[in-house]
Image (cartoon, rainbow, N blue to C red; front, side, top):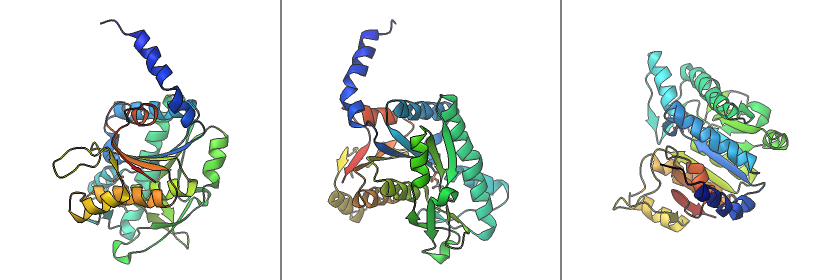
Length: 281
Ligand code: X2W
């Protein structure tokens, strides 16, 4: 089949108002471990991020990597358990968590972006005083809740056209290493930056109603009602909570979408169609 170049040109032309809307915008993208999938999916994600930056957006990638952490702990004979979506993190585990998230996972994402011609810089909440955390539930062990985010280092990277890629590791008040839920970290960073968009990329299409239909737009009140009814449950709860927290703290909109869908970020930002579930401030 011959490719329709005229349609391609029209697509680019139709993107103009969106490109103008997002010129110099800050977009925080949370890439969950479940959304990372294959090497090809990571390359496609990286290409979208580089394109975003090329057209004037300041993208910030915050990643998870829970499945990769569980895998490494398993190889070391250490069992994982989760309470309320958070990994109970012992002293023995925290070094492995940091090694996997700040090490192999972070570097695979920075490399994927660099392969597409971007300049990604990997860091964690410990770098440049980015994210200071407190322990809010001692029963979870070395798990931090972001208390203070200083985005100075991120703004310096924007000024140099570099793309920050952030592992969800924070520093405690006395400098200790703390494990932070990736969604929570992304929300706190988006709030501190006053981001235009927070994209939470996961492995489901978005928030669904009791009939299993995708809800493309939700208000804070609707999220509260769906959560009270048990329709929003399990792993979706930290995502909707993060979205609500972020918009209450000044992020213009948060979107929960399927990161495995081709060009998910571009579809959301640069087309009329949008993707997933949007929650506006
Ligand atoms: C997470 C950090 C990684 C993460 C963990 O240890 O799994 C806590 O639970 P996903 O891929 O986004 O789930 N931290 C405290 O959030 O990864």
